Amino acid sequence: MQDFGALDEVDSSLVHALQISPRASWARIAKVLGLDAVTLARRWSRLTEQGAAWISCYPGPALAASGYGCLAFIEVDCANGQLLEVAEQLTRQPMVSTVEHVTGDRDLLLTVMTTDLATLSHWSTTVLGALPGVTARRIHLVGAIYVEGSRWRLRALRPAQVARLAADQPPRGHRPGPVTLTDLDRRIIVALSADGRAPYTALAERCGASVDTVRRRTRRLLDEGAVHARCEIARPLSKRPVAAVLWAGVPADTVEQAARGIAGMGDIRLCAGITGRHNLLIVAWVRSVDDIQRLETRVTEKVPGIVISDRAVALWPMKLSGHLLDEHGYRLGTVPIDGWSTRRAGAPGSG
Image (cartoon, rainbow, N blue to C red; front, side):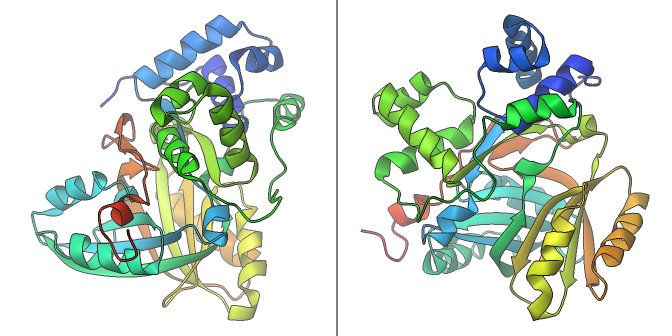
């Protein structure tokens, strides 16, 4: 386990600032926090080197809405004694953005991003289904995402500081029109998934384009919601070390109203519409296992009539938005997210 200790006041303020504006300059953050830019950069270097914090970046819902992607949660059952081997193989898959060892009626819960349904079918049968040790899989397609992790906050800053940093960000839900992707955009998305705070010079070198072009395209991708950047911290440092996953159902004509009510709750990291026996999947970070029952009580008070029919606890977040984590949630490395990799490798529709 990493021996980071705890976030002090400066670290907490820095992380909160980067949660609001992940790619803000050190000078901008220093001005808002009233601290020295060099000190903040040094602090951030220490956090990242010890795996305590990092900037992730991943395709946003606007891509799927524009026909550029398909998102699914997949439950995986493993043969006895083979869970770690299966998980190791899956964490190396570029279209698998998240892998979690969870409790309950499944061993692993995956978040998978592909280009379309045909590619998802091809991958789940020829890759996932063919892995030694995988005994069963259940696919839940994701529809609307009502809230996701980029909105979760550490809450270390004063309201005035939050407002100043938020002024740099595009309005939530800002959509100037359908997203269109170029090959360069795809390369930028993959590069950002490895380091969401990578300098434009480094992105330009990796993507084979000029710095000005990459800067312009990156800002456009972020502004349109084609990608989401977020500052993550190791879960033990969040003061909410337990991740709870709830599968819930509400009447079809109340899904959006219910989901938006749940999305406004402070502990919620994710609320998404899904297909299958349930129509909502909810992820929350809470202080203890006991808090899960209290969370369920608050959800049912917020949404009368909701039925929470299954729940799980994430024992080990092995991979989170492309970043590999140890059993305590500290970052070890990265496998860049690339939902287009199966298509290039010869999945249906390639060529």
